[in-house]
Image (tube, rainbow, N blue to C red; front, side, top):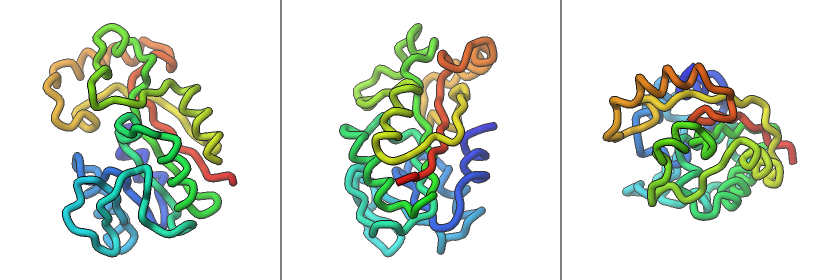
Length: 190
């Protein structure tokens, strides 16, 4: 299952898409959930509206307990202080709210071989145990976790699209801890 399918199946109610302006996943959310239920935060937002705000993930400008779901696709690795983002996600979510995070697995074999995630814009890489611990500290419990190979869907603007075929084949041979992209569904418990 790709991350878009996973998100469409697991998001509900009022949804905040953090970092919504990159890639086309936000348009899929609008198609399924409608504009009235979708909100976004991004540093690239040109004009603030009731639903869309120019802001960082570490300081979300929406009121507490407002959202049923928060989606952060390929975002947390770009955040300087990811614990602030997780605390903010917890603050804006209602009790029992869902947080979906997709992010590179820093222990993936592909990353170790090719250093593909070691770029200046990846400043907060996690492995699964580190991400689970950070979520726990922020008041979340992991409900689902799986990995996917990177594809054109998650590597918007990638110069190495030729590698997706190789990555997909290798993915199925590796144990989960060495696979590439982590997809985590966590639930607010505090």
